[in-house]
Every structure is written in structure tokens, then in C-alpha cells.
Image 1: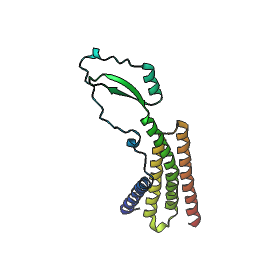
Image 2: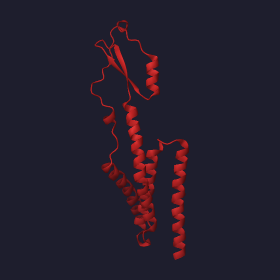
Image 3: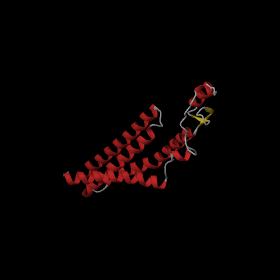
Image 4: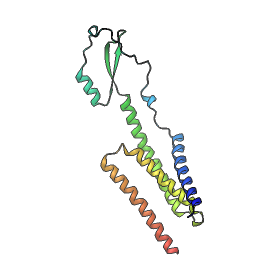
Length: 185
């Protein structure tokens, strides 16, 4: 394959993967942090003039429970900069839960598209092999991208199983295609 065909394949592959990713984001947008964690006020910078004027007693049990439940301790201050109240904000946890759910659904949408692109790239006619190679590469890049996106939400064994299944599938499709080419030749 000459350099022009290689460059065309790379271009088609990268652009196809980007197109799929941005198309899905346009149709099915990802959750935004701001939708879960709204800042409705300016966070004051505590400026305590005299520490002895502050009487707030920090509740270690409350703070530990908040941290264990993946919350963030938020503090309210008086005009002297002394803490007057603490609350546990779960917006980060809610955002992470929504993001994990989104990534899981996105995987179920995107992985089949990547797989179809791989199959299409393998079965397009030989006279357009640069385009076929690009579509094949685009499918592989799409699979890599969605796998990486969902990877952080999976346990270590689910990661191994997912990668193993994807690898076996791509190898199986490749072997079928090689055998088909040998039968024709």
C-alpha cells in the first residue's frame, strides 16, 4: 500500500471515529457537572480576625460520615469569617452516578456502531481498500474510545472480560475474513 493510501486510511479512520463520537454527543448529550452542582452564591474566603471569637465545634463524626458517603462538606460563615454551620453536599456523588449511567448507555449505543464499522471495513470491495481500511480503523478507534470511557466504572475483572471479548471478537472477524479471501483466491 503506498503512502497516499495509508494517509487516506488514517484520515478516514480518525475522522470516522470523531464523527461517531460527536454525532452521539449531539443527539445524546453527556451530563454536565453544573446541572448537579450549582453554585448559587460566591464562596467567601474566611478572614478570621480573632480566632478566639469563633465558637463553632467541628463534628468529626459528621465529617467522616459525609466523606464515607462521598459527599463534600460545605461551610457557612458569619461576617467575621467564622464557621457557623456545616452541611454535606452530595452533588458530586449524584453527578458521578449520572455520568456512570450515561457511560454505560453510551457503551451499548457506540460499541455496536464500532463493531459494524469493523465488519464493514473488512467486507468492502478490494478496489477501495484505502477507504475500507479507514472504516476498519474508525471502528477500532470507536471501540477503543468507548471502552476507555466506560473502563473507569468497571471492576478489574469486568475490565479484563470486556477487553477479552472485544479482542476475541476482532480476531474472530479478522480470521473469518482471511479464510474468505483464501477461498476466493
